Image (tube, rainbow, N blue to C red; front, side, top):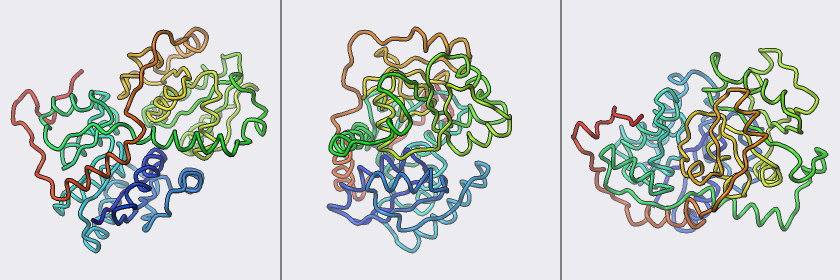
Length: 373
C-alpha cells in the first residue's frame, strides 16, 4: 500500500517520526513537507533530532495568510496526488497543512486518515479548531487519542471508522527519553541551568501572537516573576517581540528554538511549564511536570481534569499567581494510550485499505456547524 503523509509544522514532525518508522516496515510512504515551518530552526532541526526520513517533496510554501497559505498547499499537494495516486493520504493534527492535505485528497476521492482526530476546544475563533472540524468531516479513517475524542465525533454524527489508538507523541517521548538516557544532552549546563530551578515557556498560537493577542500581557507576567525563565522563541513570536520593542528582564532568557531531544531535556527538568502548545501540555503531563496553559480552553481536557494542568489565559495576575501557588495533587493516571499508538495506526490503515464513507447524521443536533460551548 502507498501512503502520502503530509506534514508542515513542529508537532507533525514529532508525530510522523513515530508513524513513519512503523509505516515503512510494511508499506511505501511518500513524505510531503509543505514548508509551513520553512526555516531550519522550525523544521530541519526536528528532522535531525527525530531520525525522521527526509521529505520526498518540500513544497516551500512558507508563511502567509490562512487562505493564501492553505490554497497554495492544496494546489501543490493536488499535483503530487495526481502523479502518485496513493491508497491513502495521512494527515496529522490541526494545522493549515492538515486541512490542505485533507481537502486536496477529498476532492480527488482519495481516502484520508486523520491522526489525532476528534479533538475539540469548542472555540471557533481558533483557526486550529476550524481545521480540526473540517478535516474530521472529510476523513475516512479517524484515529483518536482518547475516548473523549470519540464522544466529540459522535456528537457531530461521525460514527464509522472511528478508533481510539492513543497518542503517537507518547511513542516519540518514550523513544526520545531512552535515547537521552543513553546519550545525555548538554543543554542544561550550556545554559547554566539546574534541574527544577527554572520555568520553561513557549508561546506560538495565533490567538496569542496576532495583533490583538495576549503576548504583551504574557511578557509582562514573565517580567514580574522572581525565578529563571527559559523561553525558546518561535520565529513568528520573535517578530512580534521585536515589533513591540520588548526588552526582557535579566531573569527572562529568550533563546533560539531547539531540537526535540533538547526540548525534552528542558521540559523534563523544569519546575513548571507555561505554554499555549497542545503538544507540550501532554508532554508536561507524561513527564510529571506541572503545566500552566496560557489559553482559556484546551483540547486536552483530561490534563486539566486530573489536576496537572491549569488554564489561566493571558491575565498577568493569574499567570503570576499560578506560578507561585499551582501544585498538582491527587492521582496521576495514565492518559492517551499505551505508547504503541503508531503501530495501532498502521494496523488500522492496513485493515482499511478501501474504507467505507464516514457515516454522518443529518440530525439538527449533530449539524457540522453546531459546536458545544
